[in-house]
Length: 435
Image (cartoon, rainbow, N blue to C red):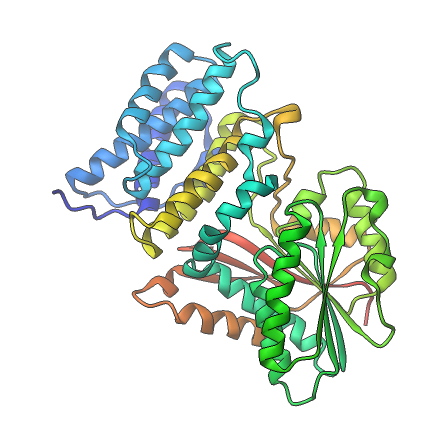
């Protein structure tokens, strides 16, 4: 077997460089692609050559579909689908899932699918509760094995712990509780502090991304965990199915409580719904939390052309696929389920779905979030050195050079967490008033 020396990122950059050279010859100015390219190796193996070729064909397929050259696109796309695999290397898996999304777009554009393709509930499992139940073990495994998730989580919780350090009663409002692992980090830290805690309340706000029953099951687990820590604790669920449901009475607050808000990859869903983010901020301002910690996907898919969208999505998700290859075994069932049941449909939703089929998620980079929050009168706070230190500690727990691939880069007062320098998540800390 030939030895593969190039990383996934290098394979893409070599393919991109070649694509850029040919594009310049054919169609003039494509300078917007330059930021995807950097110094690339000039020597590689036979196996690398095959993967570079496969990736190059994927790039050309996207270009041809974007320019409506369907006959030519069909040739390149068929090659991609024939020589890629959902069970292969990260490059082969990337080409497989992107190729499937491109095939879906090709079929819609050429009229081969007359029903507007795959329906909403089949394309985006994030909001499909029955799929999330079966996906939960895979999500837990991936969140544990990929270092940028726990590194971000510990930095988030440290930012909150610092701001409730002197509070005897704490109310933690989680706008997207997901698996609840962030809550256990917070609970353990509060149980170990010198100043005894009189009571911790966690309210899980449910915007319909999971069933109330599943949220309550997480609550039961947290209640049991609190008992092992001898931590006075209560758990509540606040269901929000409509903007009109958003009000401060949802949270059953106590005047003696220090309130902290946690928003993990949820505001990008809320911001697409008319006036929903504005309503949420208005309610949060009334309850006056001492801190709101926001983590979002560090990506921007609001671009003018399909070709630009394709490249933006490709580089973000390629880093994610590469991290899965490095951190998990090739045949790990959790990895395969995460890729097939979660990442694949996400790609389809971003690149193909339109109108009622599309789950409206507006991923933005940290600068755009700053503009929005400042418009609402929020004040950004500095992420402390202690938070950064905790993130560094967590990533160092991953052996075999994996932790070194998790990159932590300061961005103003916030933090960008990435994989081999490719941004994955942004973390920022906000206040609702000036000190």
